[in-house]
Image 1 (tube, rainbow over the protein chains, first blue to last red):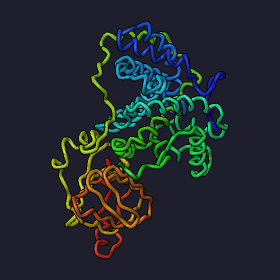
Image 2 (cartoon, rainbow over the protein chains, first blue to last red):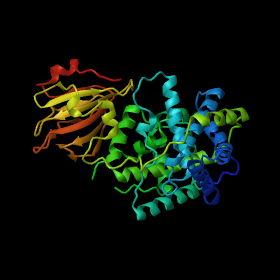
Image 3 (cartoon, each protein chain N blue to C red):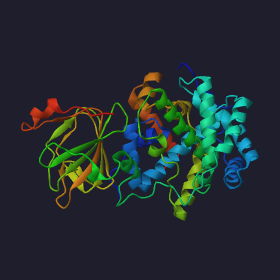
Image 4 (spheres, rainbow over the protein chains, first blue to last red):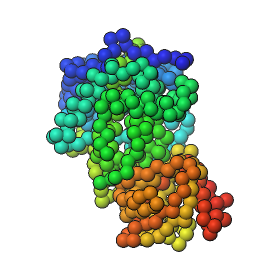
Length: 200
Length: 220
């Protein structure tokens, strides 16, 4: 594996609890009062993560990574009013914006001529309004973050390839020199461990 | 309620944003019919967010912050009236299709393939996939064909059945290369499906085999 993604040494499967609420509050302050101090706090925390995400496994240059940071943070400012803390964690909300902007940037670089933006294809929040479902969704958000740190390294490695580096299962298999079936089954095992509900 | 869904592999790739545009658009149309899949995808996005939070940050210079702060004056926060959610699409045409069609099914140019099948190609800009609407007359049959590549099908109106099952509004079906079938629309109403292909169909019955050389992928 040529470049291993770096996770912070304090990695504990993401920060649940109090700090998460701090970022939700920031977003609400931005939406309500156009609060620049809150925006700056939010920027100082998330901009380095967005830049790391931009650079993960991709061919983006440092200056394009900075451009992505700007694009994402401007969207955060504009769209803060659409964030609903009942339905999503602030970090998930930012992550989806960063993911969409990165995909759009790749498509621009490849001169894709499309009437669609990634936002059209990947709507940000679409969860149930039904109280019981909302409670279940919140519990599962918390447990996913807790369980992440219990995943074995081979499963973490593949999740990082897929989610952070934006590789398809087939590309991940290629890069790790594994059969496609192995990649798929590791992803599925990880998803199972995280107790994601697929009620069919 | 939809009974046939994208599998977990597809939903994970969708949530991670790694599906090709045309396929992602098709999965997204299924999501507009299916709350279960919306909830699963939202949890799969939490997995991504959790990895994102754990990344070791890359230093961002103060000039980037200042540049963003300088642009905030021109960019007032948007106001949100109600929710912009991917609300249930039952009974109406999914928004993303309306966008691609510039209107409704009746505004499209339909190309007649057989007496009961017409096709209209939509442009997504994805150079590798054909993104087309199939209109099958009530009770009409599509000649038996196999798939040279992978095919996603999503039922938008009416329904159809083949040897493996019967499919209705919102149902999502994935066919792998080599699968052959002869879908028949329900008797009661016309069926409209969305089909996303990465290689042209291949008719297998003797009556229609002569058409194969003319079936080309209309990607883009």
